[in-house]
Amino acid sequence: MPAKQKKTIQCEHFRWKFGRRTNGVWTADGRSNSINLGRHSLGTRDEEEARKLLHLLDREMAIRHGLADAPVANDRTENPNLRLEDGRKLYVDFISRPRVAGGVRASSQKRYRAVFDKFLFFLREQGIAFWNQMSVEILESYARHLERKGYAFRTQYLELTTLIQTMNWLIRRGHLPAECRIALPLRKPSDDSDTYCYRPEEFHAMLDYCRSQPELQWLADVILALGVTGLRISELRNLRWSDVDLEQEMVKLVDESSRKVRGSSAPRTVKGGYSRSFPIHPELDKVLRRIPRHADGFVFHGPEGGRLKPDTVRRSLVRDVIEPLADRFPTSSGSIGFRDGRLHSLRHFFCSLCANRGIPERVVMRWLGHRDSRIVNRYYHLHDQESRRQMRRLELLDVADGNGATGAEH
Image (cartoon, rainbow, N blue to C red; front, side, top):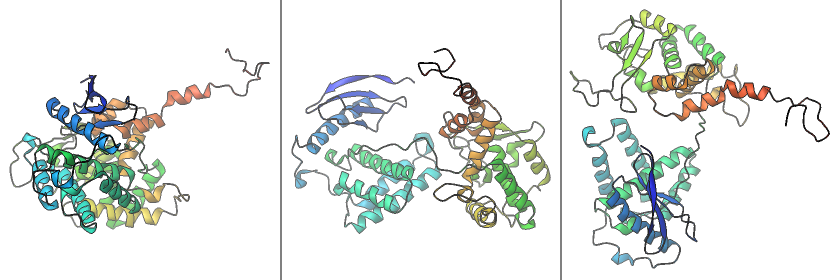
C-alpha cells in the first residue's frame, strides 16, 4: 500500500511529522526542529499506540538535549525490576506463539535466542541484572563490543534492532515503565553485499574437482543443484521427491505453515511465507534421474546416505573443495575472492548467471521466492547491457572544437 500522508503533531517539547511506512509501521520525523532529532520508527502499526509512543519519544529527546529533567531512579516505575531472564522468556514466548496468531518461524526463533544469549552474557559481565537498567549508552557499548569482535555491520544492525524491539514490546505490555524506552537511531546497512559470487570457471572447477573424487560425488550434486536453482541450503535439504515433476520439468516448494502435515515430520516453511515453483535446469534433470530414491522421500543426502546436514555441507565445501582449489584462483590482499566463497555464494552465482543471460528480472525473483530482492537488483545492475551500450556511445576520442566540446551535438 502507498505511504500515508504525514501529519504534523506538536508535542510538549518538539514538532514531529507523524506518518507510516509502506509496511504500515508508524514513524516520527523530527528533523524540522531547530535541533535535528532525526527519524524514528515507532515500532507499531497501531495508530493509538504510536501516538502514545510519540509523546514518550518527545520527552526522551527533550531529556537527551537538556530541555527536561530525567526521572529520579526511584520514581522510574511502579513496576518491580524485570530480571534479564524473565524479560527474555516473556519475549521469546511471544514470538513463539502459533503462526496463525503472528508467531515467527522456528528458524527465526533460533536467531532471536542466539541474539539474547550473546547480549545477556555481555550484560552480566557489565554487572547488569535487570532490563530496567538498559540505556542508550549500554546499547552503544554493546555495538562497540560487536564491532571489536569482528561482527559484520549488518549483524550489528539486526541485533541492535532486535534488542530495541524487545524493549519496546516489554514497555507496551506493561512489563517495563514507559521511561525505559530507548531512542537510538541506527544507520541501516547498504544494499551492497560482501558475499562472494563465484565466476563460471570457478563453479565448473568445483564441479570437476568433486566429480574426480569418488567420495565427493554427493557434494558435486549439491553444488550443481544450488548453482542452477538459487535454492538456500535449508530448502535443498528439505526438497522431497513429491516436489519434483520430471515429466513437466518443474519443482514446486510448498509452504506448509498453514497446513496439517501427516506423519511425524514437521511442516515445511518457506522463507517469505508463500509457495513457489521453478523449471528444472537440464543439468539438474540429469542428476535427478541418476540419483537413487531413498525411503525417507528426500531428494538429496549426505556422504553416508543420511539426511543432508547444512553444517556438513558447509565444512566439506570449504575443507574439501575451496581450500584445495584456492591456489588456482588466488585472491589479492584485502579483496574478497574465491577463498571467501561459501554456500550462499552459489545463490549469488545463480542470480549473476540469470542476469548475464538476459532472463527477465521479475522471472528470477519469482524463481527465488522474492517480491523484492536486493541480491537480484544488484546483479541486474552489474549486467545492465543497455548501460554498457550507452557508455560505448561516448566518443571521447573525437577532435574537440574550440570550446572544448567534441564533434557530437551539444
